[in-house]
Image (tube, rainbow, N blue to C red; front, side):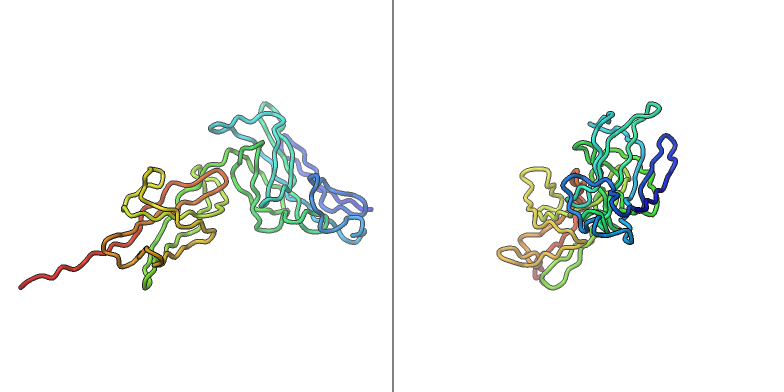
Length: 262
């Protein structure tokens, strides 16, 4: 059996991370996790995937006061991929968590390059969002996650449909990286409708994960060409803690031409 370790001095903490685990050695894996490969069957010629290591201070925020012993968990999708707790050193609160990969000896659905990691402390979602990377140890202070910033929406007409588009939202309102899980599109019959104000004369027409939505004439709704009813739209980005503010309104306006006289 051969065990290769990497050691890093991180100021108040000394973290020792197993880089390669062979033979009967196993790395910490959350209880109940599904292993894609049996480490015993791999043999000494197949190194296990090293975890990605994150550490840093834990900062308070509105409605959240961290304390020693609180649980720190790392999630990739619906998979629990790492777990630890808050410790105290020199009067400050810190965490360290190893986020396992899904390669040999890892957990199915866990770490792989470009996969987003959502951190939680007890039930509080934390920011920033990280992307799994086991090439280095990451200094990543955590603070409470905020809702995302609002998207910047454009509109374009094509025949009897309207297409909305926007760039990907990657920041929360505290300028931390965040994972937007979907975008919610509202359609209203007043140009300055507010979906938070009832009655809003509006409807949630779709939730999408992509960066655009096409609304077409269908049923009793003519989104283009109806001079009696005009439609406006807003889009909200949604992350694990809530929705962004509404975007600026975009829409289309139809009016009838009135014959004149000479």
